[in-house]
Length: 435
Ligand SMILES: Cc1cc2nc3c(=O)[nH]c(=O)nc-3n(C[C@H](O)[C@H](O)[C@H](O)COP(=O)(O)OP(=O)(O)OC[C@H]3O[C@@H](n4cnc5c(N)ncnc54)[C@H](O)[C@@H]3O)c2cc1C
Ligand code: SF4
Image 1: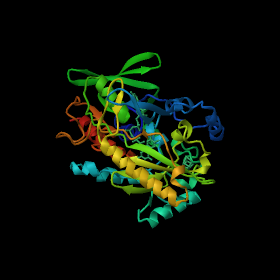
Image 2: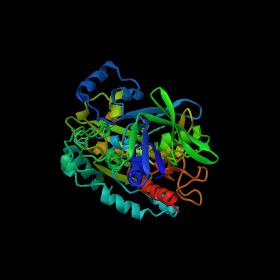
Image 3: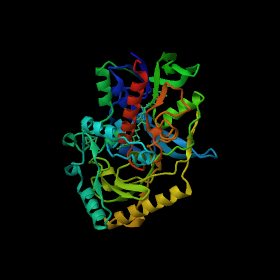
Image 4: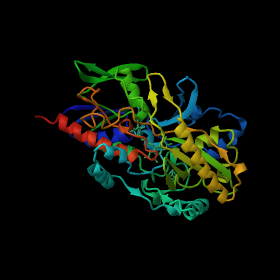
């Protein structure tokens, strides 16, 4: 059996591991540890905010090791938006809000048809939009306001079984009830078919000799080792994969996008939106979406967010940003373009209108911290003749994560990343089939 080494265990990595386990000797290397949902008392922490103890978003990792926050740098070298990703088994899917949307228009425009893969996923992963009974009364009102304005709000399809949802409001902090599906289920399937899952292993570089990858140089605690492989699959995410490639001497595209998020919040006593599923519905506009979303990063780390979590109405603007940014070996460069700023302002203005119609005067609205968690685009599919195998890569090195997305989605990537990862697994199977 060919030895396949998968780096990263999130949406892409878990999908490839599951697809190849049993027919290939699959090993997954994951930098983070086993995932545990956030277990601390949120009310106690909310009271601690007043002491100013939480002053930098990057501190979130001390409270919640599965969430990593870094600062992007501008080209002139100053700190910029907060970049968020999951680190641990299941990758960023464990801290997702569970949205399951097919977003492959950009791939289709490049002649890539993933119908078969999406159909398989529909059989393998539970998805439902039947969760309205888990919404707060304020969210229902907000939905009505959006409908009245002709904004065509839609309940978001979610990964999982929401009959098990306890309305804890912590979707992005890990689901304690198991209602929300995440990629650890695919990892468990892969392990049951014989895959080896190694957490706490950070890949540094791909070891290439005579034009072929021989394995991956990785760190585990203080020790370093080369893990041998016949095929290397990089699925370390939109920030992780380009960093590994750059360290290995393979230049990626300076086309990083991240789907920046900015929340607008307004006071409303007893709103209760801290006790419901995150992002219950969405309004889609050209270049951005708007959804109810309690941004816990802003809640804890932004001094302007001082009200109790149950007394605010938080709305998110998620932007489809211009693909201008770069992951380097030491830093990530990303800043909003003028076009991004214009679209963001349009989204913020729409949120302002909605909040006013709910009864919160504009002067009471506060903005949150600009953050982003949908990185991709560093090695886009469809650039060359082999849609899913970039010519810069050795023949036996593949990428199977959001780096393959050709354009910013401004919408949830997980389902599309998994569909692409399935296709990559099929191509690897063809490549390793004994002739
Ligand atoms: C707060 C938040 C909420 C989100 N909600 C949604 C949602 O509701 N729906 C949706 O579709 N998308 C959502 N997303 C985005 C989505 O989770 C990601 O786009 C998706 O998981 C990307 O998949 P991936 O395989 O590219 O990377 P990831 O899922 O991030 O997996 C990459 C993995 O690689 C590991 N890794 C990184 N570097 C290394 C290394 N050097 N060596 C070994 N391992 C490494 C990481 O620890 C991680 O486990 C959300 C993102 C955030 C931040
Ligand atoms: S609100 Fe429901 S789905 Fe979200 S984390 Fe809590 S129990 Fe899970």
